[in-house]
Length: 331
Figure 1 (cartoon, rainbow, N blue to C red):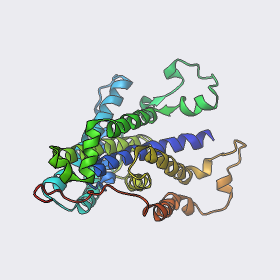
Figure 2 (cartoon, one colour):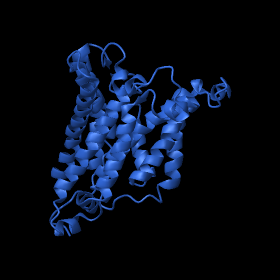
Figure 3 (cartoon, rainbow, N blue to C red):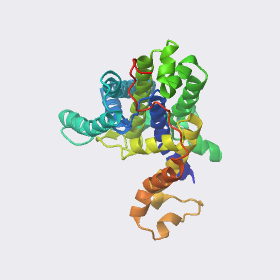
Figure 4 (cartoon, helix red, strand yellow):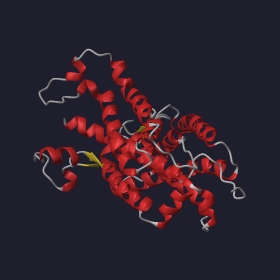
């Protein structure tokens, strides 16, 4: 059960970060299906930043610099989509698709230059420990029993889990309790009305896409740190597209997205670790003994995605002006 919860949290954190990023972009009126490509770029830059840190750097400095590098890389890459969509009035879906296709090739090109191989690892040794909270981090004896809650949410838990919770709270307040959030939502619903009130629609859409890029970049680095075992290889296993499904299922609302991320994270966990999940704690791996093909578990998250979207997409209401280039002269 511990393993089930820990893995679920790992997948949930990545999906929630990236889905919240997609939500900010689409709330401003820009469809960002380039989340997958932004994750790939953010993952690479986070790994490179970790490698470039001087020997003897503190764990805090390594975490701060690598996360910041991933966020900035995501912002820059998302800026390409923003420029094409806002300044050039390009088709946002085609632009996002192009960025998704470009990112893996670009990342592999740089990895081959840097490491002359197809995978770039963070560093030798236990790199993940720099980003993880353990008993020793809190000054607790290794043999101490923290109970169910402590073992699940305190011992050997990635900092990204708590960062994601903090981001969720901050971004929810930003979207619903600030003037910036109100203006952003107005630009996604009725940009003409927003413009008539003196709101710069172009700037707000750039802001929404930039925030989206930062969150997706950080999500890509968390994926590289956890699921990809502290490495980058130009692939994020479709997490960017799953995050889009989470965003739609969550109806472009932060709280709903958090719940949807938890659901999709659970199924992704089952798909990845069904052979080692001891659900009842009795040493019996039930899912592995059922006799169902491994391919079924591997396709389970995507099958659930199709089923969920088939039943919920009609009731989901996207921002009215998303995907529509804003023309200041039109009314």
